[in-house]
Image 1 (cartoon, rainbow, N blue to C red):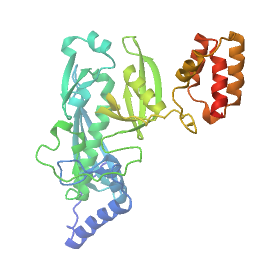
Image 2 (image 1 turned 180 degrees about the horizontal axis):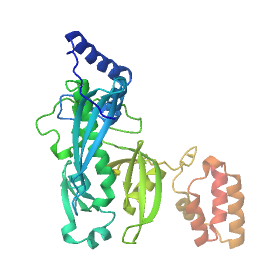
Image 3 (image 1 turned 135 degrees about the vertical axis):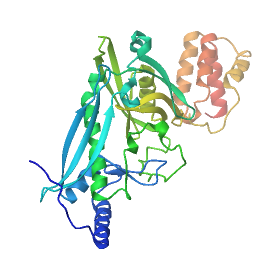
Image 4 (image 1 turned 30 degrees about the horizontal axis):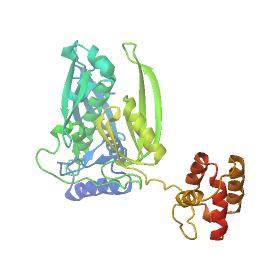
Length: 368
């Protein structure tokens, strides 16, 4: 169907104001921050996401007609898309937007190595150690991405960028939203100042501002790399957030913390697959459980074994069997609260069989 750009009367100031009011009303009533738009540090306006552009296009009944150009080479996937905005009722061409995406962009050109073995086996010109922004900055191992693996992603991203550009142009929403800031690498964001701070989402009770929390779950997935090497990936849930890692040591630390109910603090980097765990630290161990206390005696006597042995020196000898019998009779009559230093008594009797007789005499004397 051929679309023609038809001459129309310019909008009045009231109509322009009405359109802006409609966009703001849709933002309040329909859109959700984090889903349809978001505020990126270093920007003064919210960034419009693809889901938000679709809401605005549906609100003003605008159809999208994309047209793509394949600019790929042998070592690069690259698309440029032009998105036309068409009024669904009249078929009038309202405007267009343009977007481009390439596999040479930083976030598509490189990915985190699955394991040290994969990084070591990758040719030197297709691997690297790269610094990432953090406190303090840190390095991660990366390998080159196969461009064919991200071809569809590149095309979809180019279309998304073109669609958002067309949405902002046709609806006149550029004074409310900016575009594609979320597509920039983190290193390029917030270079010119703090900008407007994003709205902080409510956190779970088990989650803190630095990501600390209790380990809720650990999932294990086994597989093989493209080179045929087996691997195990662990997905660890901490404070409602999922972190991925191939490091068995991190998984063992997480399991230990989970069993003990300890609080852990994760270190991580954001990748196209989610949060990649780079470190895990136990920051708050559970309080140690105190051993049950032995009942205190009514009156703590001196060392019974020493006193009995002293008395034993002044008495005649008895047989080992008689000593053991008297000891058993004596212990059976002692109240549970008065079981004091029984270990020493047993040890002493084992060394000297005559202790039983002296023990019985001493107990009678003490009124026990």
